[in-house]
Length: 383
Image 1 (cartoon, rainbow, N blue to C red):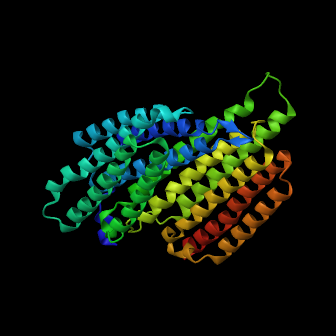
Image 2 (image 1 turned 30 degrees about the vertical axis):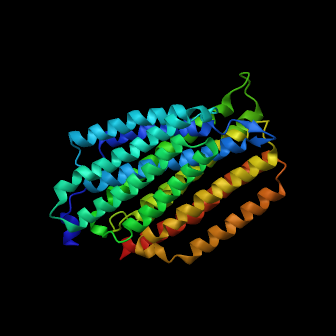
């Protein structure tokens, strides 16, 4: 405990927040890919591009965040490299569009240069860590991960379009797997877990911001204050509120932010939490799209919300000790989720009922979480 109190807490710097704002812009561009419809749903190529672009961008953010967490010093060098990445991200954002095929080279070139940029930060840091065998090992492994993925990404610039899509998927999967195996043996003391959780939380909040912006489409029309507008806009707003409250409860009450972890799984799980949030944002927008058939948009909404809660509960390994083995919570949320899926399928042709079932579900999960957190907290405070 003495060692933990002597450790200086790493603060989230302003430059990191500015860096995150570029990703908010990219999230909006990614979601725009889904507004390209064919046969009652999103065009297949656009949907594949959306998935790959979303995962690629979140992964880029992860790579940058890990470097700053372990070796960042808030110095001029960190600023320069982050500003270079920010500039390159604009090229990725511009290449994320419905006619993305015409921007294939631009997109992959910028993506590859960002990976090289982060890799160079590690390589330059190597000279400062010569006396530290553990840090030297981390740097070499991360350089291998980043430069290997960069080579795959660059190769997508010079291949036919379909092959380029496959290489993009290979690059993302390769990056995830190589990161997992390269950091598997990393000692917990190397990572500032409190800083890491705060950085991820801020990215999640920015993603919620994009979700809130998407709700503005519910208020567009002829200016009339109709009951239908109020019903759907309020329901969609409540869904976002319920999702936000659940994540906030997990972050504030359940996650052991002062614990000693290498943070690997925490970051990997958040790739899919943020991805599911992007999907929820798109699915809420789909509700007002008459071009999309009811069944596909209902299934997309269900899958997105269930994925969100599934991956939140996969953070269980980072819960405080008194919450890790809370079986009642898992049983209740599983039953609630099963009921949600069944009800949504039963009323699949009625969006008026679908949306209110979704509202009830997200708040039911929150209400399953809340009493357990407060009850445990009361027990601890009374001891």
